[in-house]
Length: 359
Ligand SMILES: Nc1ncnc2c1ncn2[C@@H]1O[C@H](COP(=O)(O)OP(=O)(O)O)[C@@H](O)[C@H]1O
Ligand SMILES: [Mg+2]
Image (cartoon, rainbow, N blue to C red; front, side):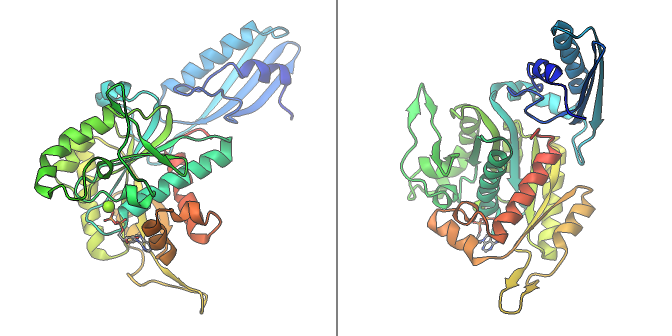
C-alpha cells in the first residue's frame, strides 16, 4: 500500500534520535495509512537502545496529533536487535567523553594483534568505503580518519597528504583528501624526530587528537590504533569514546592467537567488538581464474567464532592495494568498481549494519 502523503509530511518533522535527519528520509517508515481520520503508522528500526523506540513513538504521536485531518493515531515500532551489538550500559561510563566529541556520530577503532597485517591500509580503505557507501545511500557523507600510530604513522602517505595542519582557535584542522578528513602524528612530527621522543608524546597526542581537532560534523571517525595490545592501546582506548572495535587479521594461525589477545584488551575497557576482518585472504590468479589461499584459509572466521563476534569479510591480496598505498591514492578511490573495492564496501556495509547506522 502506498504511504499516505499527509502522514509522511508530518513524519518528516521527526528526527532519528542523535541525528539531524528525519525518519522518512532514513527510509524507516514501513506503513502509513489514513482511514476515517485515524493514522496507522509502522516504523522499523534496528537498535539495542530501548530509549530509541519509546522516544520515537512519543515524537510521532505528537506530530500526528498536531496534523490537520488526523484525529487518532496508532503507532507500531518494530525493533530488531543489531547482531553483535553492545549491551546498553558499559558505554554510559564514557558518556562524558562522548559529549566532548559532539558532532561525531560513530567512532570505529581498527586494531590488530601485531604489525604488518595491513591494518593501516585496511583502515584507510575502510574510511573511503564508508564515504562511498554513505554517499551512495544518502547523497552526502562525512568521514574522518585518525592515525594513532605514533611510531609508524602511515596514513598521510596512504592518503597523499603533505604539509603541517593549520591551527584555528588553538585547535588543529584536519587535512583532507578524497573527501576524507585526516589527522596523524605523521603530519605533526618530522620524519627525523627520534623515536625515543615519541613515547611520552603518545598519551598527550591521543588526547589532543580526540579533543583538540576540529573534526566538524562526522558520520564516522575511523581510528587507526597502533599495532599490538599493550598499555598504549589501553590508555588510548580509554581516552576516546570508541563505539566499537574491528580487529584485522591475516588467515595465519599465529595471527589468530594474537587477535584473541586484542579482543581481551577491548573487553577490559568495555569497548564492544564489532567483528573480525581478514586481510590478504587470497590471491586471485587471473590466468587460472582461481583463488589461491597463500596464507591458509579460514583464520579470520575461526578467530571470529572463538571470540563470539561477527566475521566482517575478506580482503584479497592485491598488488593494486599496495600500489594505491604507495601512490597515496587508496584503491577504493582509485578503482571504485574493482572486485577489491567491492570487498571493502561489503565490510563497510556490514559494520554500518552492526552499528545500527540508519541509511
Ligand atoms: N590486501 C593487501 N594486498 C596487498 N598488499 C597489502 C594488502 N594489505 C596491506 N598490504 C601492504 O602491506 C604492507 C603493510 O601494510 P600496513 O597497512 O602498513 O600494515 P600495518 O598497519 O598492519 O603495519 C604495505 O606495504 C601495504 O601496502
Ligand atoms: Mg600501520
